[in-house]
Amino acid sequence: MRHQGIVRELALFRLTLRKLGPLYFVPHLFLYGLIPLLGAGYLAYHGDGENARGLIFYDFQKFLPFLGCWWVLFGLSGYVEGPASELLQVYQPSLLGQFWLLWLWYLLHMAALFLGFSLFLENYWPDFPLVAIQSLAFAGAGFFLLCAARNLLAPFLTALFYEIFVMLAGTPFLRFCNLFSLSRVERPAQLALPYGPVAVAAVLLVFLGSRAYRRRE
Image 1 (cartoon, helix red, strand yellow):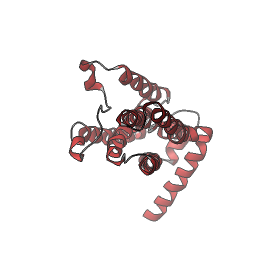
Image 2 (tube, rainbow, N blue to C red):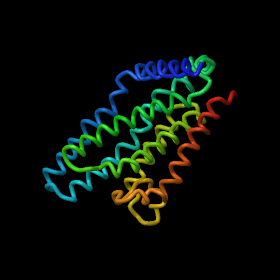
Image 3 (cartoon, rainbow, N blue to C red):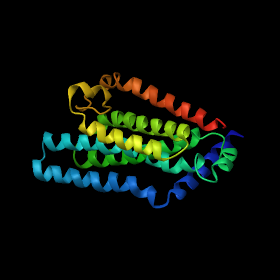
Image 4 (cartoon, helix red, strand yellow):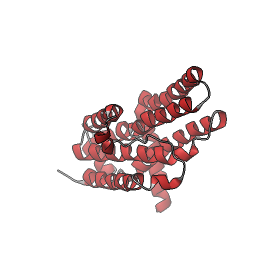
């Protein structure tokens, strides 16, 4: 029975990706197009030094966490809004499996990007857990808002406006709202605070989103 459930979730995951259509390739354009292109530009302008490598690290944080909610939001929006949502909720009473499959699929794409940079430029793997937690925070918060508000616009605009806000929040008194790190990860202990609580809160939001999805009007 459990094996059949796993096969069903994987089949539904495949259908969800197909349903995305051209939207499925948007993260690919950033991960394997824009970010490497910007990195090459930094290296050409600043030379192969700390400035260029630091700017690449900032671009990881600028784009990767936000894109972490892309497949989750656009892939699962049909379950909470639209004419077929009530029927889909009967067929699929929980979205937890689909959320984790979509986020892990994105995490694998992130890992491929880090592998490419590590092979051709520098080892960015110590920074991978940091960016993964940031991505989970965006995905978890987006999933919760998607299920609670029952529409795609609310979580997407929230993620977009937060992204713009943190880019502009350079003043010290606003940095407590900033999820992004000003320095690279030198040792795992750096992630304990504040990113340990951030990861716990993100997972909690995922389960709260699942409860909101199962709630009937």
